[in-house]
Image (cartoon, rainbow, N blue to C red; front, side, top):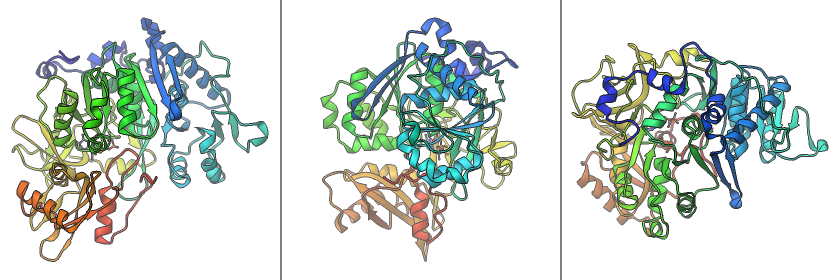
Length: 567
Ligand code: 6R9
């Protein structure tokens, strides 16, 4: 039996106060995520339990108890307060996935300041845009990323403190820079945690739009309520679990479920801060006896590409529950996992803006491979007709995925851009910008981003459906399907494909793949052109950037590509 029990029972009796009660939180009282993730867990008697097990480049290892993270986050919080930072100041975290990143996250929240996590792989201009937009007052970074900060700091009048977590000599420091080494600092056992309330701002996540500047999504401390309950019921974490969320905290998955979710439940989590390889990932699972694993389709497809043989070299029997987020999860990937790990990946659908999981395949519920599952209890979800924005009743009809506002972890605004925020609501619905269908059992099926769906001669083609079918071809490692202009049909399907090792691109293979799709799906879903590529353009969180390929086909402006992965 999962942590949730029966889905239908939960739906009937659901209120968010289930979570509030378990957290010991009452409306109107103080709620501080930093405290909930460390001090409270110690108060519950788990001070000596491992909170974090970290493995870095070259095999560096460190592990910390909940008491350690309580003390270290106190120490950081106190340091930040002593240099003059106050509640609602924006503090950027610009670090690799080192333990300091995780502790700083809690430390910043403990003084009531707003934490702004950014991918350390960002170049100086991507960093600049986001620090300028948020009028960030302090940045915590590593020596190895300092040169990027130095390049832009003079153009950032609001940036007063550049805090470096590793050793630098006094003489090497420039203006605004301070060294703060957590390990050497006097541990602070007691600090007055800032009394944040439900609506006090907590995390500011930047998400890139299709056009224009990246937007800052503002979250509040009440998000804890959603994050706690979805972690418990969807990821199904239990006291003795060893959890691994593969996401970087520069992406919302890495904070909602890579920090807050597991730690507010007092769960041991592992972090692997090294580049991707199938070998090192399987090894990490085996060595740490990971039980619950939360990853993304891009990583899963890479593992599939590496082949099934390698899996036999490892004992992965500790795995109890698998989940995925970030992109549509191809049915092929679900079936592959069942075959190789003895259990499926459970898809979870949500966004930076929603703050927590919204639609999902619940543990214990029938998984339909290729479907996103059903709405989380308390979430009212629908697909809306395009023009009227009214919910569609007919099963199988494509519409816009929308939610009724009001769940605890919903964004409160886009930073400095209330207008863009308001545009997300129509008829009392929050619009996700994605399209789906609902089947006669209430399962949601992803179709594509609103602007990715292809209309070829009047037929609507889901890029996801074509990509999933392509993945069933033996030669295809990964693909991105977009439209290209066509005189007769206005637009037709084009596929960009990266091949599995051992396959060579040629005309014959192109024709074979086209035929494969024609037989599997239809003649209009068949790519009219296949372009073989080494790799696909992706964001730092692993999402295929179809719009880059689309723009290339249509000779249009590419728009904001600051999240493009470029190494
Ligand atoms: C958590 C996160 C949100 C967008 C979302 C959609 C896509 C995420 C998905 C999925 C299909 C899933 N997306 N999960 N599409 N199936 N299970 O990813 O947040 O980075 O803001 O992206 O990602 O297009 O609108 P974010």
